[in-house]
Image (cartoon, rainbow, N blue to C red; front, side, top):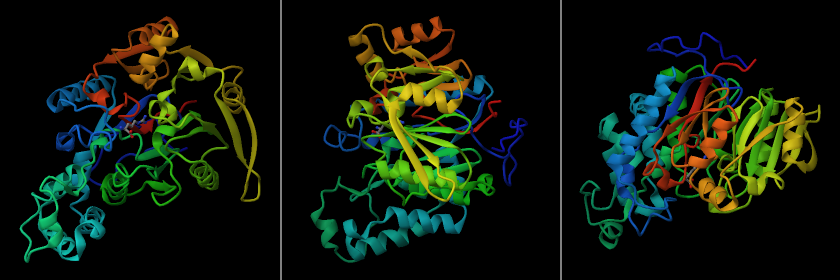
Length: 415
Ligand SMILES: NC(=[NH2+])NCCC[C@H](N)C(=O)O
């Protein structure tokens, strides 16, 4: 782990300060967010399920809420980087533009003629316009007038998507994750999100700020989403395995981080394969060096397989055993403190659904949380955690809280 404590150094036009993350709670210095934009305006009652939103957000209000989230982080000394800015800047590089165009144009959907026409159109637009198409997609009606009469174009409804929008870009947690001084581009499980990693991949590959950042894992590996990855302490990762991350994803991620010497133990944690618990961070996040906020319904049943290097390029697996015990042992502490979501089982279920467990630590014992989870927030404060409340009435319609909406790039080492 090489994150320096002089982490707040000014970004330079060339490479920025060394980035890295070795815990969930070390003082947060740099974070990647995505201010929701026109991609949310693509959501309708007919496509919202497929696009993984539970409602149709009021976009202006979602932006206001998101601005307040970013300001809360900035007020605690966090440098906030916005995905759209980084994407626009990265696209100044011709190779990034080619990769972006390649990722957006799907010949199987468009047919050869239309795919060619769209490719040459996108190759000629400025970086801002290209970034906007890559994020908010394009309908058949918005396609440039192609030469010739494409059957595909004539037969599609004008509102069908020629390039899909990516409304879940808001959840920057899932499409890349830092472990030590390396960034892993994840491998998203569901079709609605898969193209997101083409964007994070090109940002990390071509934005000058990241030219010295090492890579781990890769978007073409087995499914692994950042919301499932928890850095319990330096050297110890928990990886949720359920609706998104697969057993093969957890295993190959473990091999990758062991090969790079980034951690010594990976706990693979089975979680129910359902929407309410799509990622491990929907039922458990860290709020202090030795404390988690956790959904009580899983507290006694959550288990873990411990994966460790076997000393000769392979891995050894033990367990399953109770998650809290396996975690404490791997972290080298006597006990992991647990703060329960909610008060009674109904409140707990409601607040779990509204991302009460999905807190983002800005320092040990200081977390950002949705204000609506009144009981959970009170319990956190009762346990000595400082809670910075943000409103998320519109942001929450995509089922994600402060942790899902943030990808920490630099935390001060937890020593
Ligand atoms: N880390 C998280 N819990 N992310 C939440 C992602 C929510 C998003 N709508 C999805 O279904 O993929």
